[in-house]
Image 1 (cartoon, rainbow, N blue to C red):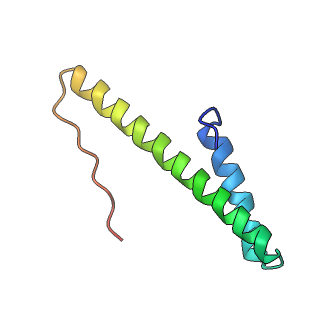
Image 2 (cartoon, rainbow, N blue to C red):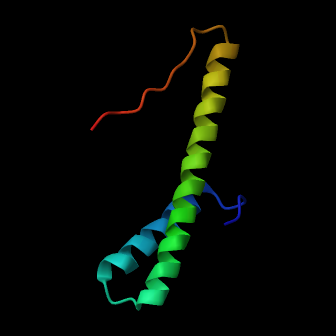
Amino acid sequence: MSETISFEEAMEKLEVIVQRLEEGDVPLEEALNIYKQGMELSKLCHDKLKNVEEQLAKVITDDGEEEFIIKEEED
């Protein structure tokens, strides 16, 4: 998966993959390939979000604000 794809494009592709897999009429081999692509897109989105969080934290701390910590939500 290419890093040049935007977060929004990756999310759109991921949504299409989820829809196809939920339909259930995809042959097994194709479903496996689609699933792998989805996992790559998911990782790409996660990495991009993590990068943005780190940039945001740096901007906030560079501006003299208190240290910024992002807490993950609990279910």
